[in-house]
Image (cartoon, rainbow over all chains, first blue to last red; front, side, top):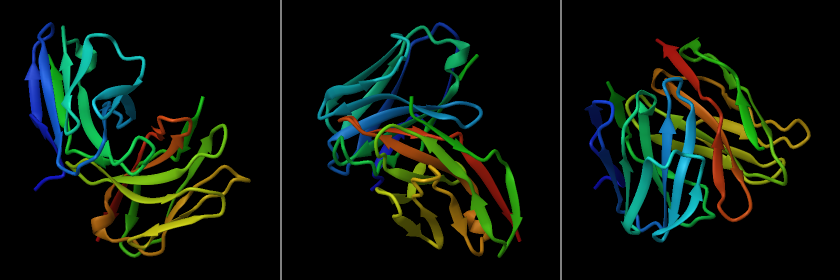
Length: 113
Length: 113
């Protein structure tokens, strides 16, 4: 009964490929997030959805496209992968958009070769 | 823009030593402040928070006080344990609807027996 789950845990792929990372939360939260953590552990928000609607979209290349089929899921699609996309991607959720206690998934380590 | 600066790591201590991890912030308005902890191989977990000046957050023996006059939120623990080994992130919330979290760069703590 994991609260926030992500698949896959590890993803190794070639430059130019398209890949997806899935995230699901069973906490009944309205808001979900994607974060990128680089090799120096720096964590930066990418996107946030509240009840399937995009509310935060940082300056992320449009090769990255989040999709929220329902409020329990927020998937991240990445097209034309580049070396610089290698990082750990964390999904998170919170009860409301204004609730700062965020619950994080275990992360997906993406390696682009 | 808003930012969080925390002391560079890594920090290595012996068990039962006193811990301080410094965190200062730059923000407009009155942000809420947080410490998150990331244990090896896991996602981030909220450790403690404070929502207004002079509030003290505490959890698991850790404490931090919201100091508006010095724009600081230093994390302290009187006696660390090996199990406290982790990366610690200071964060603030940006107010204005989205309540976006802005993280510091993280401080890795290693506690030796």
